[in-house]
Length: 257
Image 1: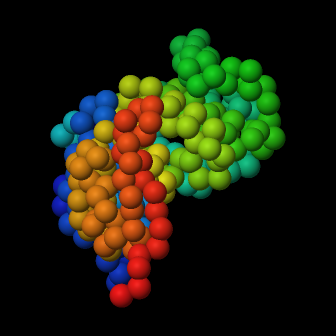
Image 2 (image 1 turned 90 degrees about the vertical axis):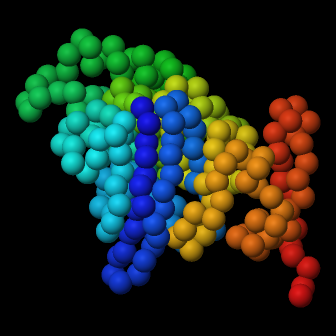
């Protein structure tokens, strides 16, 4: 499923957070948003999962205006993991995953065999079947993220939107979560703080600065030393990863002017 964000602007309380942003995420591709804190990444993603309505512009899923779809139809097509999604639910991991089936159920309907099958398959896909009976608040950060990704997979969407999915995870958990996202087969739109993780796991990057797109393309082409100096205020040294060959960045401070 394709995602197209067309000339989206977001203004809140008189402040323009996002300015005329246009981007495309092709079916099955992983598209990353990178930029400094406060650049507009989260505001743009909130438009993409309907937590925020754009002041101008349109978000489209396979050509259909997302904000014109019913809540149920929108949730059947798109699943989201906001930054605040990993709350202390008073539920088991299985019950959290079951929430992903709500868009497919009618009012007052009971869980079906198809729902149970979808939940079991989602937990197995993320390697979390053994966590099904555990209380969600007792899980580690990485385990919680796996369960939340399973919830998204149980929705059977075409698109997954994630806002900083590796926050508060150790490096092994970060790699694990991004590998799960990468292997999902879904169209993925994600904001990432770590530029090296973004370079390794995304097909395309969009760099956002002061609410605007200032660069886009494959990570190797986008993450240049001049751009990183301008946008992030650091000096970057590009080296190839010794195993994957992808661009890897080493940073130090810019020399004083």
